[in-house]
Image (cartoon, rainbow, N blue to C red; front, side, top):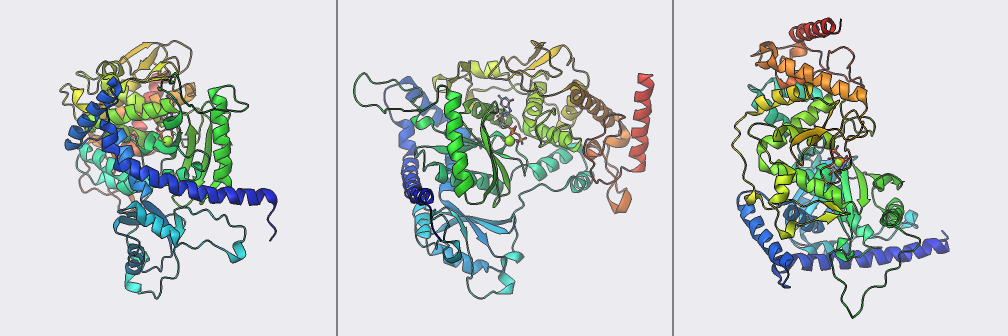
Length: 585
Ligand code: GTP
Ligand code: MG
């Protein structure tokens, strides 16, 4: 097959990709080995001293089982760099598979999962093992003459010899990467004996698993191997629900191409000596630079990204991004660049989630409830987003008496010098040291909080007031919008600007219905051994809230196949419907 000149050029740059990414990984590993030294390095500035202080408090937080998002990122990224993703045949013999891999070094952890086939994530103890493994991999040839000789860490393993049927992968447990269907969840919750247990069962079923988190960081790391061809100093970090503690299995993977290490931000130019000659061509704004960076990376991912399909460059959005599906992991990916405010929001949400276990449980429950009723959607539109919904839960928790979580202004007041952060003129400063945050002693149970959440928003004066988590107070709306939630960092913006009046009405009506359901002894107490249709346990408590709504005019957009509600619940809902009709007439 003839290879045209431009393709040859691309091939050559692909070899460069390989060289660069190997170099990038090696240098990162060295850098990480020295993390401790780096964090304590003294250059005589306040920032560095404070950084060392932050590190010490990170250490004490770790003793308390709490890690800062920064520490989590560093650990997970380093783990991901030592990992490979291998497509396996179901007939693969696990023992032989491990024996084959351990030739290259000790394995720290491995697991299997299914996504259009069986895959294994293998984490080696040492970075060198990955290099040794890659040295020996075959590049597809023959009928694939035009295959790109890019040695990614997405590999495929075949023909490891004879199959011992007792030890095939198909017989091994694959780690689930998606949530159980809602019907299953409703059944599971109906078997629990208290609402508190229902909430923890829901959280357990929905939250990201250890394996899924590892896979998310690994996909970022695989992507980084491609991006370093253009930008050798870059890293790719997950943000949003993949890392903020509120992610549900199956949520999208938001990624940030981070060039901050060479951005020159926060660095004073020396009066003499060499500096890089920057030549950003045809770009007269930061946004234009972001667009061109994402444009080249998008093209590269599209053409050479192993397993990346359906690449779309959405560069004219408010936040330019490259969207694609990463088939081997099953993740829907959004790659952005220069999106530091979103990373700050992620850090903030993570911090709130770490402060009190009720925060995460309530957010999970409300997110799941909202999804079950089509209040939120994976498709962009006039719906409330998960981010807005999470801010609504946080605001509600700030409004408890005493408050369960502090206001953002309070977190800013507790910040040390190293926490200072101003992004595009917006003050994004807040404390990162958990030990500085004193919580008030609120003893409300999750059951109470759930009921109160629905009541709070069933009666909130949305037409006049805006939600503000900076102050922990509602304020007069600064602009006309059905739902106004002040952006915590870009305070002139409304994070729920997209929400239309009918979506807000549905949300309020559903809150009214759910508050009412939780107050009825018929639905708020366990139904004992009672079984509904097809032998399923009779839904009660939280399970009832996830059943299709019966309130007139607020039927879910999507028709879902669900277990029909039990006769008793149908009756209750019918009476609610009549009550609503009476109110209207
Ligand atoms: P899901 O993907 O729906 O599970 O939740 P998510 O929190 O990841 O939301 P999304 O993917 O829509 O956005 C990713 C992250 O971008 C969020 O967690 C926020 O940190 C940030 N973000 C999203 N929307 C906004 C917004 O309107 N304003 C601000 N400041 N940040 C936002
Ligand atoms: Mg997301």
